[in-house]
Picture: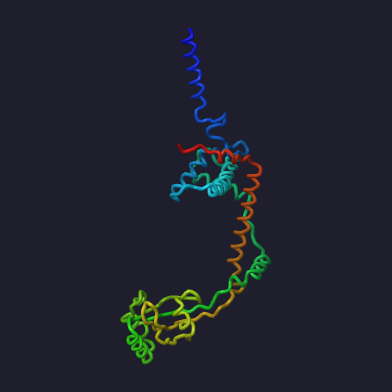
Length: 278
Protein backbone atom coordinates (compact mmCIF):
# COMPACT_ATOMS: atom_id res chain seq x y z
CA UNK A 1 0.00 0.00 0.00
CA UNK A 2 2.80 2.35 0.92
CA UNK A 3 4.61 1.51 -2.28
CA UNK A 4 1.46 2.25 -4.34
CA UNK A 5 0.95 5.60 -2.57
CA UNK A 6 4.54 6.61 -3.28
CA UNK A 7 4.18 5.70 -6.92
CA UNK A 8 0.89 7.63 -7.08
CA UNK A 9 2.48 10.72 -5.57
CA UNK A 10 5.43 10.46 -7.96
CA UNK A 11 3.08 10.17 -10.95
CA UNK A 12 1.05 13.15 -9.78
CA UNK A 13 4.22 15.21 -9.29
CA UNK A 14 5.43 14.26 -12.77
CA UNK A 15 2.10 15.28 -14.29
CA UNK A 16 2.22 18.61 -12.51
CA UNK A 17 5.82 19.12 -13.60
CA UNK A 18 4.97 18.39 -17.23
CA UNK A 19 1.96 20.69 -17.14
CA UNK A 20 4.19 23.51 -15.93
CA UNK A 21 7.16 22.78 -18.20
CA UNK A 22 8.81 26.00 -19.39
CA UNK A 23 7.36 28.10 -16.54
CA UNK A 24 9.33 29.69 -13.73
CA UNK A 25 7.84 30.71 -10.41
CA UNK A 26 4.35 30.58 -11.92
CA UNK A 27 5.23 32.84 -14.89
CA UNK A 28 4.00 31.75 -18.33
CA UNK A 29 6.58 30.32 -20.73
CA UNK A 30 5.73 32.87 -23.41
CA UNK A 31 4.39 35.96 -21.64
CA UNK A 32 2.49 38.79 -23.28
CA UNK A 33 4.73 41.82 -23.81
CA UNK A 34 2.19 44.08 -25.53
CA UNK A 35 -1.60 44.09 -25.54
CA UNK A 36 -4.14 46.54 -26.93
CA UNK A 37 -7.87 46.20 -27.59
CA UNK A 38 -7.80 42.45 -26.94
CA UNK A 39 -4.86 41.81 -29.26
CA UNK A 40 -1.61 40.41 -27.84
CA UNK A 41 2.06 40.24 -28.75
CA UNK A 42 4.14 37.54 -27.07
CA UNK A 43 7.76 37.48 -26.07
CA UNK A 44 8.62 34.67 -28.48
CA UNK A 45 7.77 36.92 -31.43
CA UNK A 46 10.33 39.45 -30.31
CA UNK A 47 12.91 36.75 -29.59
CA UNK A 48 12.58 35.42 -33.14
CA UNK A 49 12.94 38.95 -34.51
CA UNK A 50 15.99 39.65 -32.32
CA UNK A 51 17.57 36.36 -33.39
CA UNK A 52 17.12 37.29 -37.05
CA UNK A 53 18.72 40.70 -36.48
CA UNK A 54 21.58 39.12 -34.56
CA UNK A 55 22.14 36.54 -37.31
CA UNK A 56 22.34 39.28 -39.96
CA UNK A 57 24.84 41.20 -37.86
CA UNK A 58 26.70 38.05 -36.73
CA UNK A 59 27.12 39.52 -33.26
CA UNK A 60 25.46 39.13 -29.87
CA UNK A 61 23.10 42.01 -29.09
CA UNK A 62 24.19 43.88 -25.98
CA UNK A 63 21.48 45.10 -23.54
CA UNK A 64 21.41 48.66 -24.91
CA UNK A 65 20.99 47.50 -28.51
CA UNK A 66 18.42 44.93 -27.46
CA UNK A 67 16.43 47.60 -25.60
CA UNK A 68 16.42 49.92 -28.62
CA UNK A 69 15.46 46.99 -30.86
CA UNK A 70 12.55 46.15 -28.56
CA UNK A 71 11.23 49.70 -28.67
CA UNK A 72 11.36 49.76 -32.46
CA UNK A 73 9.68 46.33 -32.61
CA UNK A 74 6.86 47.43 -30.30
CA UNK A 75 6.27 50.59 -32.34
CA UNK A 76 5.89 48.53 -35.51
CA UNK A 77 3.79 45.74 -34.04
CA UNK A 78 1.37 47.97 -32.14
CA UNK A 79 0.19 49.23 -35.53
CA UNK A 80 -0.43 45.64 -36.66
CA UNK A 81 -2.33 44.86 -33.44
CA UNK A 82 -4.49 47.96 -33.89
CA UNK A 83 -5.23 46.92 -37.48
CA UNK A 84 -6.21 43.45 -36.19
CA UNK A 85 -8.49 44.97 -33.57
CA UNK A 86 -10.28 46.88 -36.34
CA UNK A 87 -10.67 43.76 -38.46
CA UNK A 88 -8.35 45.06 -41.17
CA UNK A 89 -6.00 42.08 -40.95
CA UNK A 90 -6.29 38.59 -39.52
CA UNK A 91 -3.84 36.86 -37.14
CA UNK A 92 -1.34 34.81 -39.14
CA UNK A 93 -1.45 37.19 -42.10
CA UNK A 94 1.61 37.47 -44.32
CA UNK A 95 4.05 40.34 -43.97
CA UNK A 96 2.68 41.89 -47.16
CA UNK A 97 -0.88 41.70 -45.83
CA UNK A 98 0.16 43.29 -42.54
CA UNK A 99 1.99 46.08 -44.36
CA UNK A 100 -1.06 46.80 -46.50
CA UNK A 101 -3.29 46.87 -43.43
CA UNK A 102 -0.98 49.25 -41.59
CA UNK A 103 -0.87 51.55 -44.61
CA UNK A 104 -4.67 51.58 -44.70
CA UNK A 105 -4.80 52.30 -40.96
CA UNK A 106 -2.36 55.20 -41.25
CA UNK A 107 -4.21 56.60 -44.26
CA UNK A 108 -7.32 56.75 -42.08
CA UNK A 109 -5.70 58.07 -38.91
CA UNK A 110 -2.83 60.17 -40.30
CA UNK A 111 -4.04 61.48 -43.66
CA UNK A 112 -1.66 63.37 -45.94
CA UNK A 113 -1.84 67.12 -45.46
CA UNK A 114 -1.00 69.75 -48.04
CA UNK A 115 1.59 72.37 -47.11
CA UNK A 116 0.73 76.00 -47.70
CA UNK A 117 2.79 78.38 -49.84
CA UNK A 118 3.46 80.38 -46.67
CA UNK A 119 4.96 77.35 -44.93
CA UNK A 120 7.15 76.63 -47.97
CA UNK A 121 8.43 80.21 -48.11
CA UNK A 122 9.16 80.30 -44.37
CA UNK A 123 11.09 77.04 -44.58
CA UNK A 124 13.00 78.28 -47.63
CA UNK A 125 14.07 81.47 -45.85
CA UNK A 126 15.07 79.62 -42.67
CA UNK A 127 17.24 77.07 -44.53
CA UNK A 128 18.51 79.16 -47.43
CA UNK A 129 22.18 78.96 -46.42
CA UNK A 130 22.03 75.16 -46.13
CA UNK A 131 20.81 74.87 -49.72
CA UNK A 132 23.49 77.02 -51.34
CA UNK A 133 25.07 75.31 -54.36
CA UNK A 134 28.88 75.67 -54.26
CA UNK A 135 31.06 76.71 -57.17
CA UNK A 136 31.54 73.77 -59.53
CA UNK A 137 34.03 73.09 -62.33
CA UNK A 138 34.04 70.43 -65.04
CA UNK A 139 37.61 69.19 -65.30
CA UNK A 140 39.73 67.18 -67.75
CA UNK A 141 43.27 65.94 -67.30
CA UNK A 142 46.14 64.26 -69.12
CA UNK A 143 48.48 62.29 -66.86
CA UNK A 144 51.91 61.12 -68.05
CA UNK A 145 54.90 59.51 -66.36
CA UNK A 146 57.58 62.22 -66.68
CA UNK A 147 57.88 65.99 -66.51
CA UNK A 148 59.33 66.10 -70.03
CA UNK A 149 56.31 64.26 -71.42
CA UNK A 150 53.98 66.65 -69.61
CA UNK A 151 55.82 69.72 -70.95
CA UNK A 152 55.63 68.27 -74.46
CA UNK A 153 51.85 67.71 -74.03
CA UNK A 154 51.44 71.29 -72.89
CA UNK A 155 53.40 72.66 -75.88
CA UNK A 156 51.24 70.68 -78.28
CA UNK A 157 48.06 71.96 -76.59
CA UNK A 158 49.26 75.56 -76.87
CA UNK A 159 49.58 75.07 -80.62
CA UNK A 160 46.34 73.07 -80.97
CA UNK A 161 44.04 73.76 -77.98
CA UNK A 162 41.25 71.64 -79.45
CA UNK A 163 43.40 68.51 -79.43
CA UNK A 164 43.04 67.93 -75.65
CA UNK A 165 40.50 65.11 -75.96
CA UNK A 166 42.49 63.27 -78.63
CA UNK A 167 45.78 63.64 -76.73
CA UNK A 168 44.16 62.39 -73.54
CA UNK A 169 42.93 59.27 -75.32
CA UNK A 170 46.32 58.64 -76.95
CA UNK A 171 48.76 59.60 -74.18
CA UNK A 172 47.11 59.80 -70.76
CA UNK A 173 47.78 57.06 -68.19
CA UNK A 174 44.73 57.95 -66.06
CA UNK A 175 41.58 55.77 -65.84
CA UNK A 176 39.45 58.38 -67.64
CA UNK A 177 41.75 58.50 -70.70
CA UNK A 178 39.14 56.70 -72.80
CA UNK A 179 36.69 59.51 -71.96
CA UNK A 180 39.07 62.13 -73.31
CA UNK A 181 40.41 62.84 -69.83
CA UNK A 182 37.00 63.90 -68.46
CA UNK A 183 37.21 63.65 -64.66
CA UNK A 184 33.74 65.06 -63.89
CA UNK A 185 32.24 67.96 -61.90
CA UNK A 186 33.83 69.05 -58.65
CA UNK A 187 33.35 71.58 -55.88
CA UNK A 188 36.14 72.69 -53.57
CA UNK A 189 37.25 69.95 -51.23
CA UNK A 190 36.51 67.11 -53.65
CA UNK A 191 39.81 67.08 -55.54
CA UNK A 192 43.24 66.05 -54.24
CA UNK A 193 44.90 69.05 -52.60
CA UNK A 194 47.67 69.21 -55.24
CA UNK A 195 45.08 69.56 -58.02
CA UNK A 196 42.44 71.73 -56.39
CA UNK A 197 44.37 75.03 -56.35
CA UNK A 198 45.58 74.87 -59.97
CA UNK A 199 42.20 73.60 -61.21
CA UNK A 200 40.08 76.30 -59.58
CA UNK A 201 42.52 78.99 -60.70
CA UNK A 202 41.87 78.20 -64.38
CA UNK A 203 39.46 80.07 -66.61
CA UNK A 204 37.15 78.03 -68.83
CA UNK A 205 39.18 76.51 -71.67
CA UNK A 206 42.54 77.40 -70.10
CA UNK A 207 45.38 74.85 -69.86
CA UNK A 208 47.24 74.52 -66.55
CA UNK A 209 50.97 74.41 -65.90
CA UNK A 210 52.38 70.95 -65.23
CA UNK A 211 51.22 69.67 -61.81
CA UNK A 212 53.13 66.86 -60.11
CA UNK A 213 51.41 64.36 -57.78
CA UNK A 214 52.17 60.84 -56.62
CA UNK A 215 50.21 59.61 -59.67
CA UNK A 216 52.41 61.36 -62.21
CA UNK A 217 52.48 64.67 -64.07
CA UNK A 218 49.15 66.30 -64.86
CA UNK A 219 47.98 68.84 -67.41
CA UNK A 220 44.49 70.16 -66.59
CA UNK A 221 41.74 71.95 -68.48
CA UNK A 222 38.49 73.39 -67.13
CA UNK A 223 35.61 72.80 -69.55
CA UNK A 224 32.90 74.63 -67.59
CA UNK A 225 32.43 76.64 -64.42
CA UNK A 226 29.24 77.15 -62.44
CA UNK A 227 29.41 79.95 -59.87
CA UNK A 228 28.14 79.39 -56.36
CA UNK A 229 24.48 80.28 -56.07
CA UNK A 230 21.36 79.81 -53.98
CA UNK A 231 18.37 78.08 -55.60
CA UNK A 232 15.46 80.46 -55.95
CA UNK A 233 12.18 79.91 -54.16
CA UNK A 234 10.52 79.03 -57.45
CA UNK A 235 13.22 76.46 -58.25
CA UNK A 236 12.81 74.91 -54.81
CA UNK A 237 9.06 75.23 -54.20
CA UNK A 238 7.78 71.78 -55.18
CA UNK A 239 10.74 69.91 -53.71
CA UNK A 240 10.35 71.78 -50.41
CA UNK A 241 6.59 71.22 -50.41
CA UNK A 242 7.15 67.46 -50.74
CA UNK A 243 9.85 67.51 -48.06
CA UNK A 244 7.67 69.43 -45.60
CA UNK A 245 4.69 67.15 -46.24
CA UNK A 246 6.84 64.10 -45.56
CA UNK A 247 8.24 65.62 -42.36
CA UNK A 248 4.73 66.46 -41.18
CA UNK A 249 3.48 62.95 -41.95
CA UNK A 250 6.45 61.34 -40.18
CA UNK A 251 5.88 63.48 -37.09
CA UNK A 252 2.16 62.71 -36.94
CA UNK A 253 2.80 58.98 -37.42
CA UNK A 254 5.22 59.05 -34.48
CA UNK A 255 2.62 60.87 -32.38
CA UNK A 256 -0.07 58.35 -33.36
CA UNK A 257 2.16 55.39 -32.48
CA UNK A 258 3.07 57.02 -29.16
CA UNK A 259 -0.64 57.37 -28.42
CA UNK A 260 -1.26 53.70 -29.17
CA UNK A 261 1.60 52.63 -26.90
CA UNK A 262 0.32 54.91 -24.13
CA UNK A 263 -3.06 53.18 -24.38
CA UNK A 264 -1.54 49.69 -24.59
CA UNK A 265 -0.17 47.52 -21.81
CA UNK A 266 3.58 47.03 -22.26
CA UNK A 267 5.55 44.48 -20.24
CA UNK A 268 9.25 45.30 -20.69
CA UNK A 269 10.23 43.14 -17.72
CA UNK A 270 9.06 40.00 -19.49
CA UNK A 271 11.58 40.65 -22.27
CA UNK A 272 14.40 41.62 -19.94
CA UNK A 273 13.86 38.38 -18.01
CA UNK A 274 14.18 36.28 -21.16
CA UNK A 275 15.00 32.59 -20.86
CA UNK A 276 18.60 31.51 -21.32
CA UNK A 277 19.62 29.88 -24.61
CA UNK A 278 20.94 26.78 -22.87
